[in-house]
Length: 226
Image (cartoon, rainbow, N blue to C red; front, side, top):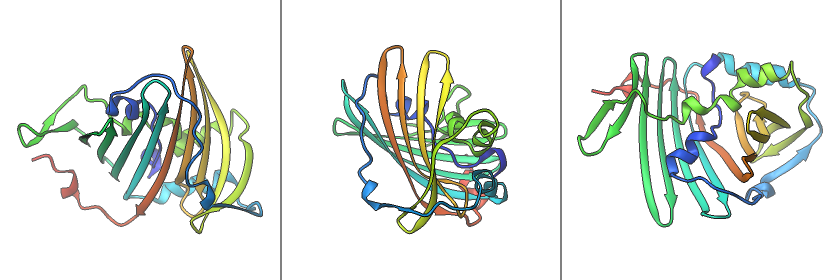
């Protein structure tokens, strides 16, 4: 999907569920479904390049953000991508309360669904999950290949899907971010990601699982705001 390929976000997950604070490390609950296999001979660069041929895609992300002060926040994110359009639906659960946010990105601007009006309205300043996904964009990962070494490169299977595992860090001002990713060898898109982040003395961990991929054509009507 060229520069709009599937990626995982950090900032908007926290904004969407209305949380900030400290966390303790949380090991993914589905690690038991991951099995190591002999390393693949295919390079990580060639695996990531497979996203270039994806023109339309739907997928879901199950997110778990573990914070010592606020407990565990969970969210389910649905993403429809067909450049230049993107639609996202984020459903967050915290303290027994459920919140849903729907955003459609179009060339003329970003629209958010206003339940009171029963329609999408133009919202230039809306915070978006998709626009915060650069940390895991395949184009970003390919550029990182030229600037740092990905560690612990190995091949595993996740629910029958062959995946390449690697770790890297992002030296962002005021934050230390360590990321572990499982990239689906067949399509070059993520199956899992684990983030360990420290910012201004606060720590948090985030666990993401990707599922229900579909690469079928998405009708333009899916991105209608009228």
